Amino acid sequence: MNILLATPEAVPFAKTGGLADVCGALPVELARLGHRVSLIMPAYRKARYSGIPHEPLDIHFIVPIGSKMVSGRLLRSRIPGTDVDVYLVDQDQYFDRDQLYGVNGEDYVDNCERFVFFARAVLESVRLLDLNVDVLHANDWQTGLIPAYLKIEYARAPRYEQIACLLTLHNMAYQGRFWHWDMLLTGLDWKYFNWRQMEYHGKLNLLKTGIIYADTINTVSPRYAQEIQSAPLGCGLEGVLQHRRDAMYGILNGIDPDEWNPATDPELAANYDEQTVLEGKPVCKRALQQEFGLPEEPDVPLLGFIGRLAEQKGIDLVAEVAQRWVQSHEAQWVLLGTGNPKYERLFRALADRFPRKVAARLEFSNPLAHRIEAGADMFLMPSRYEPCGLNQLYSLRYGTVPVVRATGGLADTITGVPEGAADPGEANGFVFSEYSPLALDETLGRACEAYHNRPFWRKLIATGMGQDWSWARSAAEYVNLYETTMERTRQTVGV
Ligand code: ADP
Image (cartoon, rainbow, N blue to C red; front, side, top):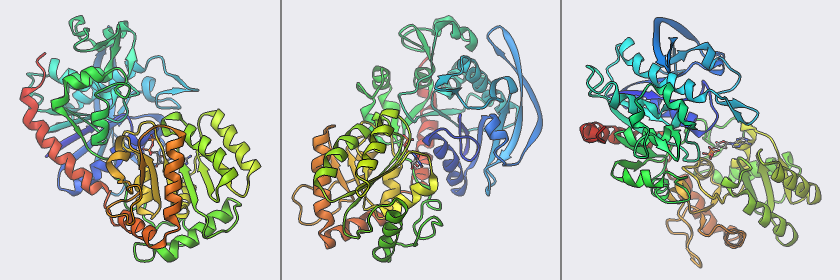
């Protein structure tokens, strides 16, 4: 199968979120499965100076953007260590900037124009690079126009008419909404600016456009695919998603099994695997306690949290429960994250007042994230919503028991210990449903009780460590979905 993955970001070229991890890892696995896959993304300044070699191709093109013609060219690189081609769309005025989408919390004012250009460039590249594409896999709002152009402008063009298009939705909270005059930039007729196609409450909505025109759509977990078909998680597009529910799928993201492997992780005080976790993990826990200035108590449960300090992540619940527990429970809290200044202040103050129980690092540190995953006994993810979530998967691999709220990918990956169970059975963590501090408090209470029941805890750890959440599994599911997408190509929404 020939696959072209169009994405606004991919590791190791440029990253602002989990989308980049997916788009960096999935093509490698697809190639390993024997498919021909290449990736196309903007040549941001970060991508050009990422240190990964690239070469200019002698391929220049001009596309219409509103009433002007804009030129660009293609650079070629590779995903390091693989032969997966990466085409970088080079256009200095649009992409030679400090950041990907904006600075100081403000989006760049010409984001619509930048990604109209990118979408048109992707389609022109198919012809210019002489690519045979069976499936064009688009990602998030930045690529939402690609399926629309395919259906409207390229529908009967040789080489394009057979291309099937999948759009992956990584987070419904980001939709690419622009004022209606930006419709002119797309070059598409105003007749498409209506509530059934490209318009949403008077604005141009690029994610909605992609959802309408793609042959199939998927999200990064089956549960999130269901949840976004109603409010509030559909973020206003629940009706559109219901309309397209026959074409909607959910595929969990995977983890990079080389980067997140406790047996080889160079950041850890001791390496361990399923067989040696009971010796290795206590060493990592002691090292973490030392590093964070907590008392070296082997039998006090150590609770970890890593992530953006945003309400999406349930940080308000963690804050409330931690404030109560420091007064009443023998437990240690380790928090790593940045975000909402209110929570940064709160955790800093809590760590100052209770240095024997709470440690907070308000920074972004990948090495620390690895050491927390290894050293903690439990990992908290009480998210309000979670399209997929990666930390719970890292936790399972590191023998750290996840305590999660049943939403999105968390619900799909974590099986909770039933209340009052004498044996964990198939469970790999603790799960609660209601978004409340009380529910987290109770569930954490149950988890801490189970922690002191050694055989019970050992079984929980073994179940989690024995599971496979690697990309290899997810990539096979994408291959099936690509096949389904190709089959559906001729049956998509009429234009
Ligand atoms: P999201 O993409 O919504 O932020 P995910 O759980 O899907 O959440 O992925 C977030 C990734 O970023 C995880 O790998 C997590 O460990 C990492 N991360 C988040 N905050 C930090 C931090 N402060 N330091 C190190 N890694 C972090």
